[in-house]
Length: 183
Image 1 (tube, helix red, strand yellow):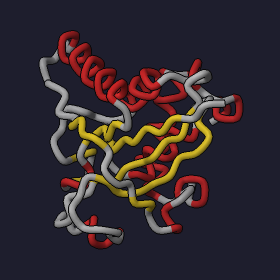
Image 2 (cartoon, one colour):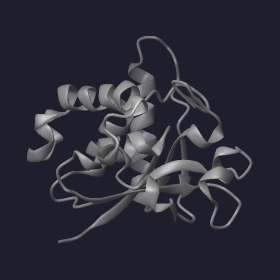
Image 3 (cartoon, helix red, strand yellow):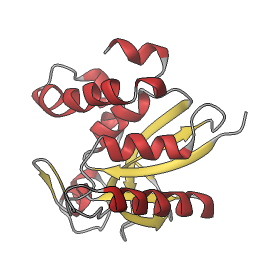
Image 4 (cartoon, helix red, strand yellow):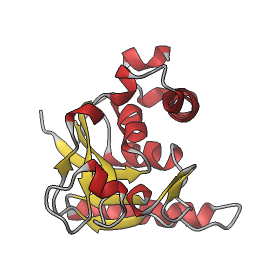
C-alpha cells in the first residue's frame, strides 16, 4: 500500500485535524507548523505571529482510497479560502489558508483546483490560499494531538469545530470513513 503526505493550513489545526481524521483512506493526521523561519517553534511562538509559521495538519493518505483532489475538495469546502490571515475569530498569519505541496503533481493539482474555484465563483471573491513547497513540518506539542476527540464539550469545539464537521458530513459523505458517518 503506497502512502502519500499532504499538508494543509486552513485556520486552527484543531479544526483541520478533526476534519481530515473523518476521511476514508487517511491513516494519520498530525497538527503542526510549517512555512516559517524559526526552527522547532513552540505554540506560543507561532501564536505570536512572528515566526511566519501557519498552523497546519500533515495528512498521510492512501491514494488508492482517496485522491489528493478529494482532499482538496474537503479542504476548500471546510474553511473560507477567500480571507487573508483569518478563519472566523482566529486572526493572524498563523491562521492563513495554505497548501504545502510535497510533489510537483500536488502543486499542479492545487493550482488547477484554485483556478477552477476562481473561474466558477459566483460572488467574485478570489481564493487567497497560498501554494508553497513543503520545507519542514514541525509536529505540534502533544496536547494539540486529538484535541477535538479529547475536548468535545469545550466551547471552541462546540461552537467552531462541530459546525465544520457537520458541514463535512453533509457535503462529503461519500468520502467519510464508516466510523465518521455517525457524527
